[in-house]
Length: 298
Ligand SMILES: O=C(O)[C@H](O)[C@H](O)COP(=O)(O)O
Ligand SMILES: [Mg+2]
Image (cartoon, rainbow, N blue to C red; front, side, top):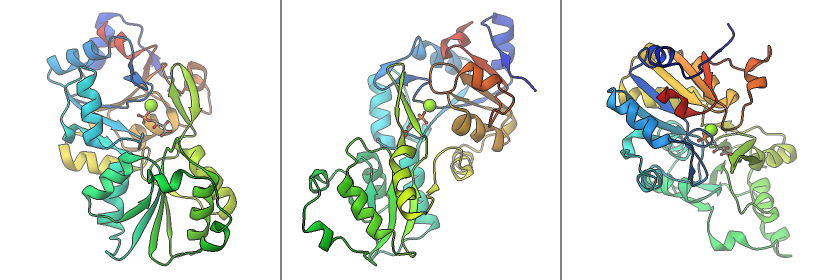
């Protein structure tokens, strides 16, 4: 069924809102671009909270931990508890600890930023790489000798990394020669929306490793239903009374549709365009869409 464009008429908007008790909110491209809040984001979330709606933040952006996202949300005037935040760094750390059950003598090689490191520490999982200054140097001659597969490396975990380098790829490539070493990604979004433009996403950071190793990472972010099950486990919500709000069809909307949620709502302030949403081969079709989140204020 073609998605409905909600045009801001009050009756239509409140009828849509009244269908749900819980709203799962994507962040990049919906609430903000980088550190810039989008139009009337705070007022819109306040309105939903004033109607007694539960709000959960569900982001694929692995550069921050849940604690760091709470700090960002607080700083932007959006009240939130750490428990109301699910980020791909957290779902990855939980997967490695509680599903993979990585032995204590094994470690994770991280291509990514502090969000991943903090959530791995919270789960008591050993890691290296990541933001270590040692990682932010050019390839050295001796590296060609020293970089070898390492049986202690149980996982190569890749997320959005603004400091990715040939040297990091060279190291990860050696580790992934060992078929016992798992190849995981926090998320595989090809692009990242910021300042009204698109930039390379986490998926574009892990893609070169797939090209060189022919191995495809298991992604722990949206649309992975492992994340949905974790959120449902926490909030015991009724999926039929829950709506996923996002800017990207192949992560956010697919996440909600495959999760059997009562509704999905797309906004046009991020990655997916109206044309993509309306196209007959859209990878996932939202129930409704808006030009921007604040149109929910009607
Ligand atoms: O490249 C990325 O990691 C994504 O573009 C970014 O993280 C998306 O975050 P979200 O829209 O899920 O908040
Ligand atoms: Mg987004």
